[in-house]
Length: 62
Image (cartoon, rainbow, N blue to C red; front, side, top):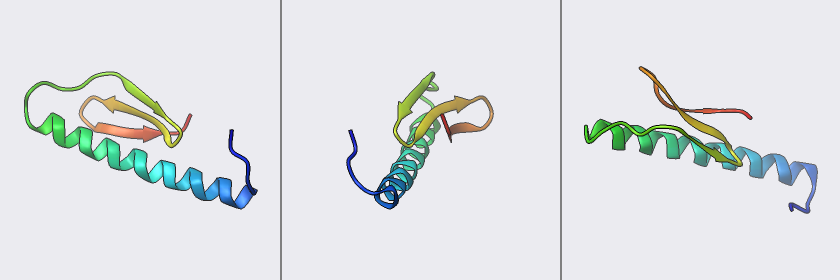
């Protein structure tokens, strides 16, 4: 459980979102290798990383 100020929480949430977006970009790169597309979704503190057909991996808010 996070214990801190509201400002610290917002900063950490923003950092988690940025990391989730980096993870989505890595998943796109892995899929681009042509070894088979990934599937499903990953739940992270930064949002839900999910595959969208024709769009690649994206991060969505919960």
